[in-house]
Image (tube, rainbow, N blue to C red; front, side, top):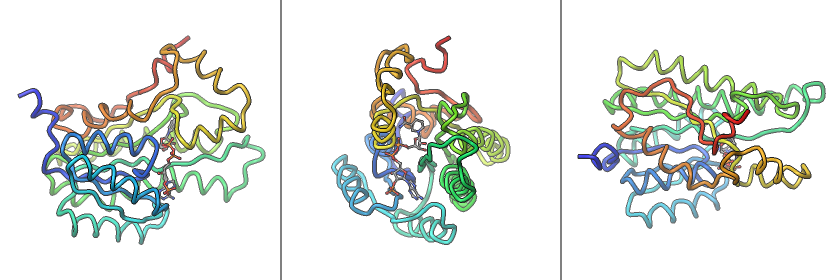
Length: 256
Ligand code: NDP
């Protein structure tokens, strides 16, 4: 009984940015629970490696090379997933990037790039996946926010705007799609060891130590920390949970 609440066998999940970092950590969790996975990203070498990793877990996995800021490409991706894997039950809007500049130095094209990648892509992917998620009968959308959904930072001009926006977008969709039995939730990662933050650690001296000191758990997060929350929010265990934004941050957001 308990395990069936978390059973994803027969389900199909799309994970944008599923070829590395937090996206791969979540994709591995879903695959271990039995879901077939479509890995969406631009880097085909990374996507091929992720697909091989996921297939070893005994599920079907498919790489769909896609730039999530390109609406036509997203539409083709959704068609391909339904065509090749048969359905869509779970959509994880995880693809993201940052340009670290204060507000007065950020250019409009840089602002647009961050908003398009982190926020508008979630709108486009969710809107185009909605018919399949509704047809699933128990659809699940998981959007990836950040500590910048809660806090601000001088370098996170467009990033904080996009990640604040993703939480409000999550709440709107949760209301709209509850009658379709689609649950829509957000995960807010703390500081996690990935390519994104490896770059930041190289650029910002002392960042590594500051994160350790500011995080009650006393460590950086690992991509494996996202497997369990992804399975929970993708499975029947969370069928009465919608519109939430759940920190996975080792206590970062509750440290005074
Ligand atoms: P990574 O850089 O490791 O992963 C980012 C992923 O997004 C890659 O798989 C990349 O794939 C994909 N991506 C980026 N742009 C596009 C695009 N235009 N089209 C398709 N795919 C794209 O970073 P993380 O794993 O750290 O980040 C994942 C998410 O978690 C992001 O939304 C990030 O903002 C968020 N986050 C991360 C935190 C951290 O500490 N690491 C903290 C808070 C939030 P490809 O290059 O192949 O396109």
